[in-house]
Amino acid sequence: MEKPIIAITLGDPAGIGPEVVVKSLCNPQLYDVCRPLVVGDKNVVENVLSLCDNVAAKVNVIEIPWQGAYQPNTIDLIDLQNVVMSKLEMGVVQAMCGQAAFDYLEKAVNLVNAKQVNAIANAPINKWAIQEAGIEQVGQTKILAALTQTTDLLTMLEVKGIRIFFLSRDVSLRQACDLVTQERVFNRIMRCIEAMKKLGLETGALAVATLNPHGGEKGLFGDEEIKFIEPAVREAQVRGYNVVGPINTDSLFHKALQGHYNAVLSLHHDQGYVVAKTLDFERTIAITNGLPFVRTSVTHGAALDIAGKGVASEIGMSEAIRIAAKYSSHL
Image (tube, rainbow, N blue to C red; front, side, top):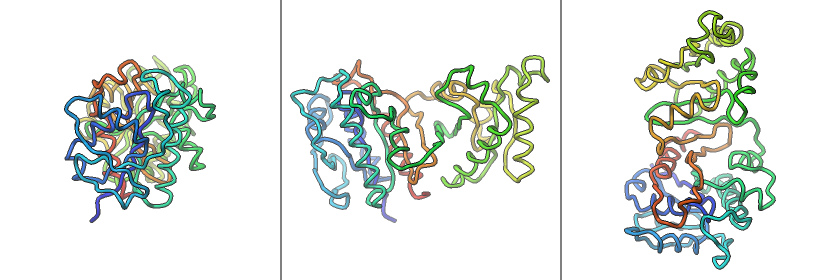
């Protein structure tokens, strides 16, 4: 069976994205699981190669994916030629870099839509640079949603065998509590289980987290479990969904780490992200469900403070590429 081609976007040229991509592709083990194809700018990549010690590779510019060599020490690249190197300032927010990062995403989407690549793995962008470029959608997920005309995408984190979904993410904690309704919890249970099926993850239960300390202690510390979460879980069970809960979060993630559950539904952003990044900050990878293709990304930012210094860790980027390859055949 042919190894999947993974389109890897460089992210913000002024951030650590190009560096972590280049370093990742110097790992020969990645070539055992996929054919990595960089979507970016040749001059940016060559600049990074000159900045990083103990990193040696040649850049192979191609026009279409099947032309790639896909072998260690060779970076196969579709060159968009959209960065003026005399104007590039590492570690600085620039409209040019925001536009370049957008262009890489757009090209990768076009490639996967044309069935020339199998999945996408994204290096980090800078949201301020995207805004400076005048792009309406700030953030890679929102950009991808607009480019593919999809809505209500579903993020799943994966780290150390644990998978974590979210009822809500980028809202205040006050808003997150208000979003815990029976209808919303039930609908998210269905979506999470359907998303796992599409990824080939059909064994084991989805565990729903509690919202309040000790699960509310039968209403002593909050009644959301009684009023909303338990009824939603029961309704899903009646309809045949393999779901359990709500389960106290002080033990839930420990049990998930032991393999008792297929995935966890976290009820707000920090409830799941803190656990994942504590387990392994660098290897916590986001998989975006609801797109017409598999898309993964690192969960760290563009790290402008260390950009251009050659000290960024590529562990997360390597993991994002590997997981994109792992799931690429399921969509």
